[in-house]
Length: 195
Image (cartoon, rainbow, N blue to C red; front, side, top):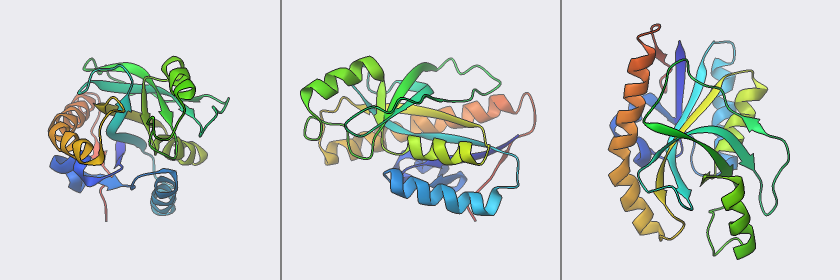
């Protein structure tokens, strides 16, 4: 099995950064990074594994989430479901959850209280890259899985978020390496590294 690991920023994956393709923050950056990657690897057989941090409204900080569906939108929700693939192993450290992917930070400074309330019924966690990564992966017919670690409850400033990411990065990296090691009990795993 070949795996291409993707994360938004290096701080999320410090301990394994040499194995991870960084896409940057936001849909546009994620789209560009994924298209460049696909131009080089589109004829290869691999699974995209996105790992990184996500905000949440009630899931405890530090919790791991196995994303099973992405809900996409800006100030309104898109209707088509984005259902993710599953790895052929159990990942009991991560609970299933839905992720809302938007092109701006999910916070009270961006969205109305009513919209944020509606998010609690639509999604468990939030990021800014997943819908783009998923869409490009599926366009090229590649399996796509995603694991997120909750960094905040939409209640922190940028400096606090950066501190949290630094604190949570080792746990996320350990989880990713453990998952790959478990996959290797089924078949050999090759990580498609950055050039």
